[in-house]
Image 1: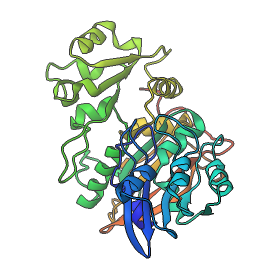
Image 2: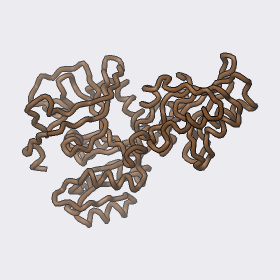
Image 3: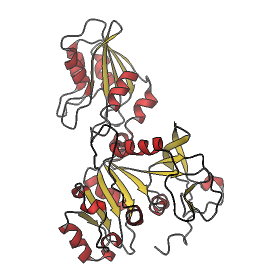
Image 4: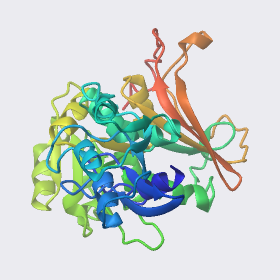
Length: 377
């Protein structure tokens, strides 16, 4: 199963809207065929493993697969049918299909055909592999995730604004791994104006890759300067989407569109875009996940609106102990511990001396808002 997981990770970010799946056929203790999900429209992992075997598996062969085999025909045919036709009588599965309409059905089909099915092997790791797909298939909407890099006391920059680099190179490389997974990356206008980031995935040994690059800019401040940022002028500008409101001025909207930039303009009484509207638009456009990288105000507003689904926080063994340094989050004022936002289904990883904590965001029943924090935006 660990080999099947490695195969699934080898197609990291390449299978949307389908899940990443790995499959391995074992005969007499030896791997004789393996496969991983092809890009959308291509064969599933199980079919590719059977194809790699090249001939009918021997009696006693076992198929290991990270996700329950599909039992509906789709565009490539049901994998359960291919498994039954191959003669394989033993199947070991990691995670169950998260789709409530299909969950467990593949197991039932296989067992009805006389196939022994063992489930739940490395289930937690297999399910974690497809965070975006799992959320999409169960909610019909995108997974809105965010990351932050902070000190031990929750600061993301010195009082001078200096922030490079709080975390180490290994942590920053892992961020690029997550960038490669998500169909979209989002930042606020101030991040664009201050850092002028490329918002692409740059991983050693791989070509630079661009997701959909969302710039939240309710007043279109990023268009005012003649020296336009990278995301409006580089070779990936057709992958840039500016998310704004009519308060920014339609003249600037036309300027962006003339540059080949897509603009999503949402009606709003203020200069802030409704994250609920943004989520619905992403669902309409089949964008299954968006990775918010900052700034701190944008991510804090996501939390304040109860719209952040998943959070990754990289912590460096650094302590500022300065109340004037910039804090990681703001905008809430819980009066009791049970009014705090929490993470659940936690994962912990180490990158050198840095620690990553990530998990699903759980909101309290009563969440108290500090109305003064964002009033000036």
